[in-house]
Image 1: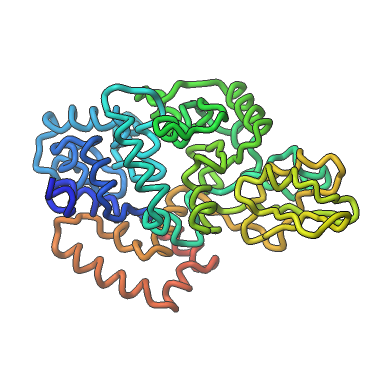
Image 2: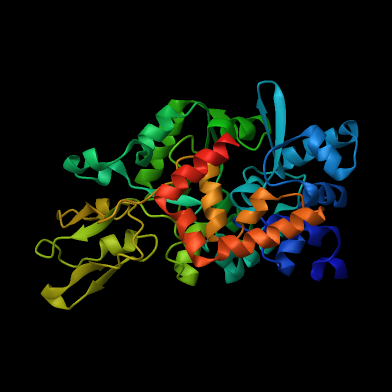
Length: 418
């Protein structure tokens, strides 16, 4: 056990590899307990040598010094457990090591299973993601987050619908997807093992496009139709759940249906006051003080306590903490006096165009950009280049330039061409 507690050995190498992702995996005894129960030592050794970007079987074989024939069943088992994601394009299969979030944390609890000790893992998962702020500080360190809020379209004034871009509409995202799958909500399933789950619906975690194909193919969820996906969204809106989508404009991978009590992202806001843990929508709650009677029903529905009630007697009114408000619209149906509306924010929220754009921006913000460029962690020259790149990119003028919209546009076009 010493090698696990101290972060040495194969599980220590795997932890360091996972920590190089933009989201990260800071060392903690709870994390090592999770890794030990999910990965065999052989699987951990393979995972520790996989690059960050997608790679074919031959490439992994070169890095692990295993033959493709020996490696294939190992990767197959890892994909079944959600430790590796495999994608087939034009007849060729590429593999990606699953990060912590969104990755094997969720995949491990998307269905009831007996091939891993879910109850034991759940205990360590809560300790790592809910009780200790270290993981939340790593996962939500930058301005660009893993997930962003979708405003409930029914909560908007019809005149404001023209302001909503296609990628901000849940209905558009679902209709434009090429594949759909549904799984158990990872967060509520984990809390169920701990005896702390709420009464919100469980089978609502929605995967889209190539991620849906992976989820269904590996038995982590079931394939559904576009119509059933739309029904899930309608049902979760009625339940007052927050729609948090993959923070990209094109081909998002998932939409979570989140509650304030179980969700790991919203928990970071509620428990650790990390108000940037989820990117907001382009709207926020607004109150008409003449119509508001301070009943507090809207405050009770808010999943992140962004609404407070102040004053006494007839002066009681609802007020907003705008730095906390997600812009989800969950509060709107609670007000039957017409005192609450979803108002456009002064500045529209900037959303990365594609997944790789999202990944690169997160990496730059979190000081991990060098890991994307030089990701062979066994090569000394890559280690040296990572060190130099980290220093250069970390310089305030360089970092500011890379994150500016104009430089981003040129930079990402060049990177895509490469």
